[in-house]
Amino acid sequence: MRLFNNLTQALLHSPLKSPLKAWALVPVFAIIAVSVGLSTGLFRPGWLDSPITPLLPFILFVFPSLLEEAFFRGVLIPRNILDSGQAKAAWRVVISTLVFVAWHPFNALTFNPTAVPLFLDPWFLVIVAAMGLTCGYAYVLSRSIWVPVIIHWAAVTVWVLFLGGRNLVLEL
Image (cartoon, rainbow, N blue to C red; front, side):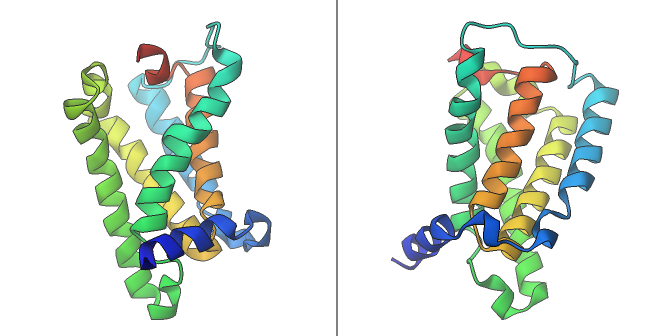
């Protein structure tokens, strides 16, 4: 019941009421992701040409963004964790990030074998870790699940539509 209440409150909390510092790591994440993505070939600038391209932002909003953030931040990090101190909050963000990173190889190996080369790529996992830390930090400071959902959604949508990202939705 406590987890349900935590997530419900996080869903009801408007991202517009979030402090600006909740978004502070977004530029750092963007620099890391773009640097790693371009230098390793994970990012290949270009437009995704698919009949479902117009639908993808909506699909990517639900999965992976909303569903993954609801679990990895909304369930694994108590909404009011800062009340327990910064060290405890930082520890929970690290734990949720480690589980988030581990989820990707597990997902590929268990449910989506076409994603194995990507989801086991160490450079991809560096980007995933940077996103996890960014989203965890944003959630702790904002107390709204919508802030990390927006960050996650924007990153995945830009990657898939404009940077040659693996469009796992099209592969299903």
